[in-house]
Amino acid sequence: MLEVLQGLIQQAGQTAVVENTEVPNEHNEGVMGEVMQGLLGGLTNQANSQGGLGSILGMLTGGGNSNQAGNLMSNPLVAGIAQNIIGSIMSKFGLSNGAASGVVANMLPSVLGGLISKSNDPADSSVDTGSIMNVLSGGKTSGIDFGSLLSQGAGAFADGKLDMNDLVNLASGASNQGQSSGGGGLFGSLLGGLFGKK
Image 1 (cartoon, rainbow, N blue to C red):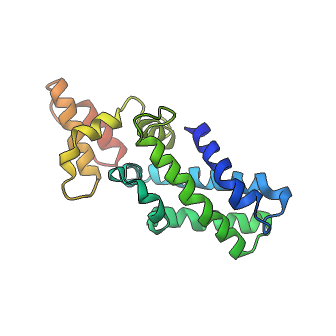
Image 2: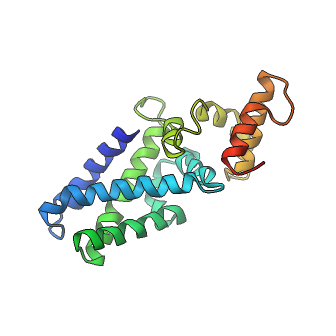
């Protein structure tokens, strides 16, 4: 996942940073590195906050909506990450607010949109939802097949929202199909623990 993210950063940074006259050439790599670090750090912090994995998973799956990338900056999670990256670029590299905002506004939707597109494309094996969630959760979700879990529950999201209750219910159902253990089974317990439910 990190290699894929790095590639998307380099691709988006070519126009947003390298060809941008407002970013001094000596800061090109640093600015792109800051965008990657800020994005990864922001998503990781969200993943480790109570209920955070659900909001990230909802953004990543997004109902498979390929044009979602255009609306990413209006997502509160993405907007918060963007503000942190803008502040960091301004303080570390001396860019103006306008220049830093322009870099972030050009790069974040492109990078996140590419990540979302790749993770939802069955023909692209470079990254999937499970590998993204595993990196962001620090390995806590290792072994959970989010793809099959979500495909089993396609009808469970009739309200159009993906939340922790949906995931815990799906996990409990998947686990109970495989073994009859009380309390939601292993999957339910694991996801319940991840999402701060006891």
